[in-house]
Image 1: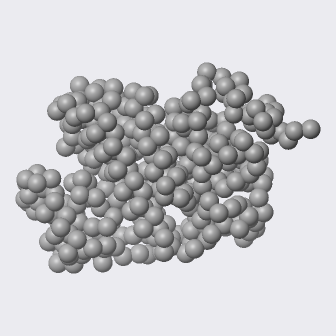
Image 2 (image 1 turned 90 degrees about the vertical axis):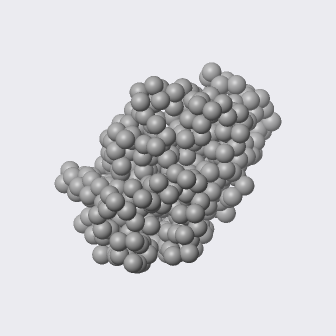
Image 3 (image 1 turned 90 degrees about the horizontal axis):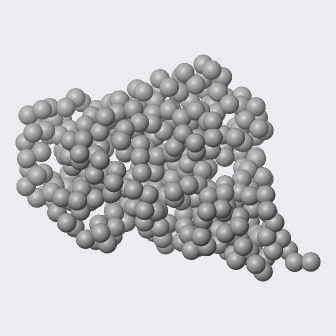
Length: 392
C-alpha cells in the first residue's frame, strides 16, 4: 500500500498529495499553497516525513493548518520533552519561558503550540506577553503581522495594541509594564511566555538592563534637525565611530533610536552600549530561539510581504494618513509603513516599495541574529534536525 500522512484530519497518498491539497485547505488554491508554504513544508507534503520547526510558519492571511500540524511534532521529540521536563522538575518559583527569533521565523505559531502543550502535559496555564515593539501600537495590524483574537485560540495575550501611534514607546516603559504583567501572571499561578523579536525589549527583561538617563529636549531637537537634512546618514556614520555596537543594532531609518543613542553620548560622554548595566534576571529562564537558513528566510519574508499587501496593508496605511498620522510619528518607523506612505504620497512604484520593504526586513533579521548569536542561554531550534538541535 502507498504510504499516507494525515493533515487536518484527512489522509493523503504520497503520489497525489499536492494535487489534492485544495480539498484539505478549503477556499485556498494550489498556487496559494505553493507560494506561501516554505520549501521544507512542501517537501514534507511530498514525502510524509518530519522535519525541523524553524521552517514552519510564516504570517499569511491565516495560519495554515499544515504549519500547525507540522509544528505540533516538535513537542513529541525527545529533546523538547527533556528541556521542558527538566525545567519544571526544578520547580521554578518564578518561571519565564522566552520565544525569540528573527522576523518571519514562526514565533507566533510556536508560542501557541507551546502554550497548549504546557496545559495539556504539565497542567500549567500559559499567558503570552508580547515583546514586539511594533505590535504594541494600535492601528498597526496587517503590517506588523499582529495576531487576531480568533487566532489566539483562547490563550491570553498582553501588551498588544496598547499605545497610540503618536506615543513613543521607551525601553523603560516596556520593562516596567512587562515586569508588572509577568508578576500578575505568576500571582494567578500561570506561566508567562515572553514572545517577540525586539532585542532591547527582550534584554530589558531577561538581562535586567537599567534605564538610561532621561531625554534632553534641547539636544534632541538639534539632532532631529540634523537627521532631517540627509535622512540620518551623517548621524549614523557618527554613531558607528563612537558606538559601533549600538550602530549595528539601530538602522539608519530608525530616527528615534538613532537620535536617542547620540543624545545619551552627548549627555554622558560614554557610548550607550557601555551604559546598559545589567542587574540580572529575577526569573527562572528557559529561552527557545527559532533559527531559519538565510535564503529560506529571505524567501519567506518576500512571500509574507506580498500576502500582507494582498490583505490590505496599503489600505491600512491610507486609513492612518486619513486619521492624521504622519511618517514622523514614532510608530511609523515600523518596517514598510514609511515606504507605503511614500508610495501613496509620492507615487513610488509598487514593486520598488515591495523590494525596499523586503530588503529592510532582511537587514533587520540579520541584526537580530547578530545580537543573539553569543547568548549561550538560548536553546536554538535549528533546521538541521529536531532530536539533536544546534545549541550554539
